[in-house]
Length: 111
Length: 78
Image 1: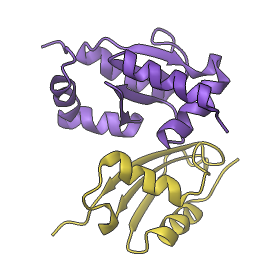
Image 2: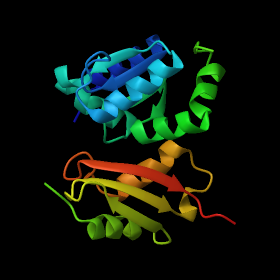
Image 3: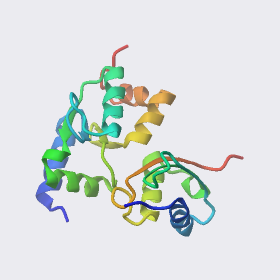
């Protein structure tokens, strides 16, 4: 069970940074195909984001799953709101909803 | 650790009785699946909530026993 300290860390992270991606590996060297796919989508949209490598932090790795009620990594947060994992991000990117969401939330995307 | 497609389907149906479930074993290794779940229970729910309902049906197996399940959810048309 994750404790409150971990939840507090996550909460500060996702509310303090506009776009946060919890992932395996780093944006430059993703360690998992699903994380890599989301990094690629964000790069394609030209969105600035912070990658948090859960492989280097077991507490966050477990804690983020409980925090979001979501069993898998990657997980994307925009302005403190959980947007989804790899499947949802991919689907939203294909329909154009992801770009819309960033625009609505005031996150700059490359035109 | 692998799980067969029939078990995945049964677990989903147990908690979403009207669900139409189609499952594809992506690599034939019993470890990487794609599932499309159609259920009226998803009506009015966000994508995140719909996927959470399926994960809940899988009772914690997702991310553990079940390594990769690409998920697509929708409500029945018409």
